[in-house]
Length: 115
Length: 113
Image (spheres, each protein chain N blue to C red):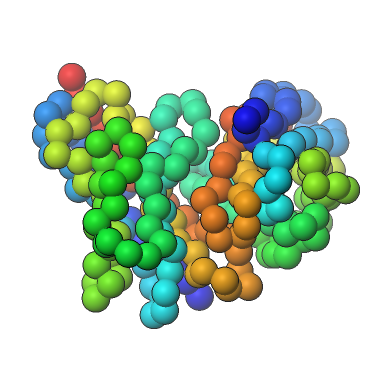
């Protein structure tokens, strides 16, 4: 079965620090990969997605993620975080065209940015 | 586009009562998902529908939970009888196809006393 691992449960950074959140998945074939963000008290919103093509994906709000197939990873990055990036970040995966249409979510990483 | 609409936003009820959560997916989306989010367990998929048909309900905790999708624009998640451990935020999401990005509703915050 597919699974998604997010290495950090809680990350605390100061404003302007660089961010990298780890995400690894377990599936040997082609996958679709997603990062979602959940701001406090809000619903999940799509940050970025990877289906195919350039493994470096640009998302909203200055976020990007790099798909490294050999490492089964899809880490999220941002060069300089802001206080408003305080949120929980979820990595998710599914198999294109597979019978299992749902997303498998990681447990999430809480990001706290100190002003 | 109105997005995924869930109601109610908040529900507080006593143990043993029936609870019905409602969801209206984005028009044209043919996949609908119900999730539960708690501090302890994170985000869990309860059930998902494709073209109004339940495809995977393995995440439904027990028989007290049931979900229906009578048409393409409406789904319900029912808990009967409710228990305090059902307290959580319940999200509904929809997508154009099962493996396309999902769009989430604002959630229903459920408190069972």
